[in-house]
Length: 113
Image (cartoon, rainbow, N blue to C red; front, side, top):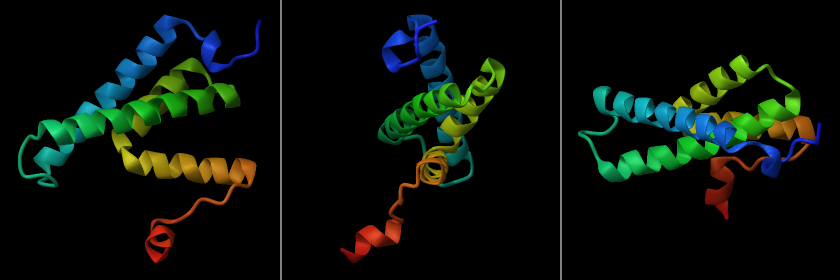
């Protein structure tokens, strides 16, 4: 079996990862509307949530593949991290920092510059 890299995955794999990621983004957006984080439906907010969720879902998929995680658990983690939005991105940053010893700048660090 060839080494897994982004170009070796099938189209169907990318389709399920992206659809699951977008579904997580839609659920995240609905939750924000229902809890009053945003006053009403906003197409620009939804598009933003979908882009963030899609990115996080794909990155979670790659991380799971790297770690050899079972496909069902991978699907769960992709959906969950996508729903988490930017919180999921912060968690992925922490995992990368611990695994590879990379320092991750905090939000306050960028404000001080």
